[in-house]
Image 1 (tube, rainbow over the protein chains, first blue to last red):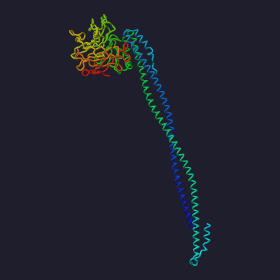
Image 2 (image 1 turned 90 degrees about the vertical axis):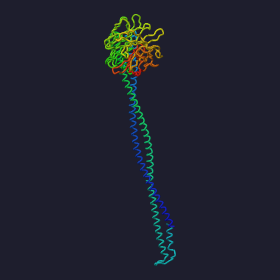
Image 3 (image 1 turned 120 degrees about the horizontal axis):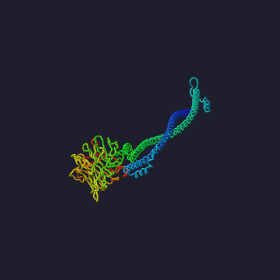
Length: 132
Length: 460
């Protein structure tokens, strides 16, 4: 009976030892996992900080580029408007030149009435001025 | 424990089997048994104690384990959320970077467009200023013309010529941007002289250039007409140099009946003034309703000839003619008669040819001419291959050698000449596209030309 008890005690003791070893192993494992996770977390936080900074910088850059684009587009609109106006002026002045040349040719041919009429026809065109 | 004590109590009652060493065997056995039991009890107690301690250790170890587990769970959750946040922020960063890249691309394109537009605007501003200067010059010429101030007219046109060329553009060969119909160009030494139908600067316009680029209006090469001629209709002048003498041939109306005829005048210098001392026209085919567009040329043996055109009447077509001149070029050679060179035969000629210009190049005679209605953009320049200065001539092809194209409309009045370097040039007049017909201007154009085996090819 005593032997049985002893054996039982030993078995129980061995089981307890095994349990303690397992628990210690788990604890060590958990601590290792915790350590790794903490390292990963630190790395992730560092990465997040970098990404956040880059994102913020990109945001600021985007705002600046948007301003630049708006400015350029406004300048382009203005330049196009000037080109359009000047184009109309050139067309008008071209008609003016043609009319004045016609008048010159008619004057040379002694056609004073025709010369006057040619000039009158392009009077409006000849008043075109550069927008600049 | 109770069982052990009972066992220990019962041990002394066992019978002694063997007597050894003064003690009976039963007693020694009992004693050993008790010792064993005691040891066993101690071991058991120790085992139990050790077990209890171990379990206590397990319990103590499980506390930090649980805490570590909790911390691990928390750290894992935080890691997951951090990674998730990093991914989301990364996406946001990438979107912003993509937006930045797109914005920069758009900025680049916009700035390129802006640069091009500003350049266009600058060119336009220059073009406007040039146009205004040109208009001012032409206006000045018009005012001077109206006041019969021919020197003032010449000066204004010469001054405006460069700016008007800039505004009209010279890529099509435009050389003198004013009315200069039926041109002919004479090369004398290092200078070039161009003559034209009456217009702004008189009966025969003459302009001079050192380089075929910059032209100066010299005024009227034929300031006075003979008494038999009608003023105001002196057309298609052309000059022949014979030694140090210059002979000007031109079209002029008979004052008596208005029929167009050809006369000649002479001068000691190429620009004139030419003097027509004739008592009547040199050529006048009254049966053909008159003769126009004289063009002198020299044959391979040095003999001078005159080509011209006669109108057709009563169903007869217009005709290009040639006849030998006297050695001094002032008269038709005695004993000679006009020889027909060419009549209209191609559909593009619309039944009418005029303005001949005979060229001897590489031993080949090539006859250039104008065809169709001069007032329209159908007017064009053709060519024919001739066996000699008096023909016969054969139409070169079914198409004109120069017709309306970019920058020119209704080209005509051909005149081929050689520059100081030996290059062939074609002088002609043309309207500007969109400005066809009188009172618009037929301007002077110059283009390089090559003639290979009698076949002309005109440069762009």
